[in-house]
Figure 1: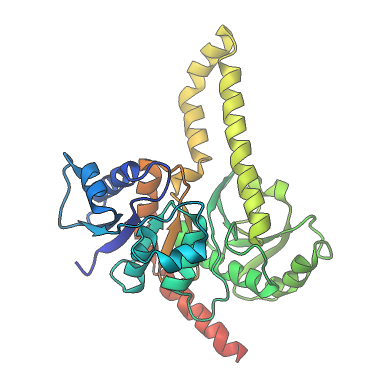
Figure 2: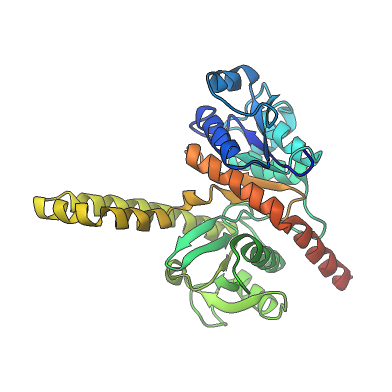
Amino acid sequence: MSDFVKVALDAHGGDNAPKEVVKGALKALKEADNLKIFLVGVEELVKQELEGTEYDKERLEIIHAPEIIGMAEPPVAAIRKKKNSSIVKGMQLVKDNIADAFVSCGSTGAVLVGGQVIVGRIKGVERPPLAPLIPTATGFSLLIDCGANVDSKPSNLLQFAKMGSIYMSKMVGVDNPRVGLVNIGAEEEKGNALVKDAFPLLKGCPDINFIGSVEARDIPHGVCDVIVCDAFVGNVILKLYEGLSDTLVSKIKESMMSNLQSKIGAALVKKSLKRTIKGFSSSEYGGAPLLGLKGLVVKGHGNSTEKEFRNAIMQCIKFKESGILDIMSESFAITEIQEE
């Protein structure tokens, strides 16, 4: 089973756990022959969800984790005290090289702390960023950072740009990804102290295709492939994106159902509209990777369903097969030698 991609799943992460977690795991197992899954959680509860289902018992293993970290618990204290929780035991599997990746839709804080403390950072990486793919008019762009580092340094943003470029190149297949720095204007002299200090670092880096500052209004148009910012700005962008997307979809549906004429029109464009809306759904990729760690950790939405869990697992398979960890490790090892 050495050629298998081994993914640990937090069976108690999210609003719909463990039911949707198990359903997503079983779906992924049917689709990927080179996959092994560890369901980490309360054994009895996980077994209840597996009752009456058919699956390859050689490729699905339950790891008993009797403790659960709640969404409101202080992350550092929870990781330190609850050693038998699904998050801690799942990440320990990655640290011990038993699993290649860990997926959780549980406490964001606990996942971020656990990723750094348990899995550990790649040598040379200052701060691991959380990096979701967000839909644009031209496909997807990587928003890095969106939640891990609210207070960042200019050197952090430079590293985010490097990691994001590697990810978009190897995972999404974007040739020479365009990197943009989120700012309040396109001019180089604009921005706060962080952006002004980070700009020349990105501009002078030969490892990235830096196109300069980008404004938030240009992001949905797909003006760049890697969107670099600190986590405070990134989280605001992400939440506004999600809220606006939900509002637009709701308003479009409401308008189409307003009278008989619009209902007839809706019936005619239903298939095309569904495809368009699907293309703008962030759930298609199944979660945000925490980049810069020695193993892959993926954080999904708390309300994730079978579809998102399945997609997150598939992301883990592609991540492993692309060799991104080795590429990042080599890249930052070279950078560290050059700085010395």
